[in-house]
Length: 441
Image (cartoon, rainbow, N blue to C red; front, top):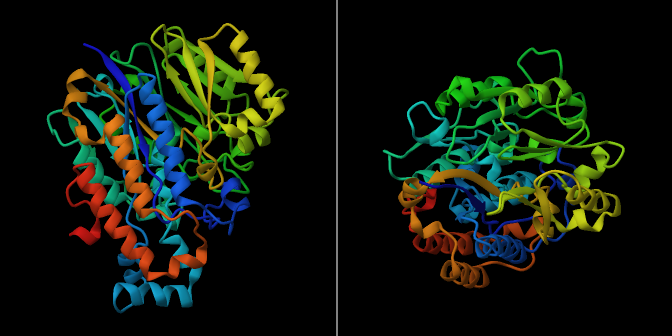
């Protein structure tokens, strides 16, 4: 039997706009109020999915959420028809309308945390939905995320989908963006490394930006996912780099099989952590980027580490990077030195993801990694798996429904709500998801 790491990429939504909603994410803040292009964002994402599928990687798609989130506006006291609710919110609190219109569900690395069957006590693939409670514009995503995952991973003999943790600060959970799995072949048990930013009442805390992932949440997710306790390690993110804009671990580190590609300042007590990993992961190969070559600031601005590290058939690895990494002379010079060093990374592949990058999400943010064996892959809803036909269908769908220009002011247009619902209704048919959105209930 074989096993693969399947990348489920998030599709940018029709309301993709730059509102600077994510305090602690410097790219998001920097591009606030700029004009976005939702159509281009979706097409850039689809091109990455298709290119990797053409290279032989298992690739799937996750749909966007319904936005604007009218039920949430009603919960906040706005009344009338759906169109009137949006009109009132736009007049009284445009920033609130912007928040409930966020397309941030495109970054599905935050959708859930995944445990492969090889690591689980019950031999199932587990997915625990993230509560994302550190940010208002993301905290409402969990119910639809859970519905979507249940529509894709339907076979309860193979899969277990768990709802989000309680919506309180102690259990702040940001999903797979703070989770790494290290080991050999995907079919074999691996070591799961949960990375947290703070512990409730703990001494080491960032001072400038919030630590979004808590130790308590990571421990709870490990329990829900039935991760074998012998295959878990908890590591704290360096609070100093959180204060420099490293809001998730996947902004400063990425892993695949035996390789951990990370910055020298990524973790608290990093030398001790790497020593532990050497003891517990056969063939562990750290590629530690020195501060003298790439500063934390340059890592954040280029999203060097928000990359995908993908295994090739010969055992070597390819690093999938955003265009911004190639355009930075120092970062690109270092990356070419990595290719010449004694490690599995021997290829760089660059994608233009500028629409996503300007809102603070690179290649790794856009995908949820799910390790599946042959039987499990057969049990996945086949309509979400990327191929030539789905690529063409989704591009046609994007061309029909997506706008090529959007500002915060445009969110008040009631036609945008109607366009979005019509588009998502059609998308659920394309992906065979059933009724997963509130307006379909």
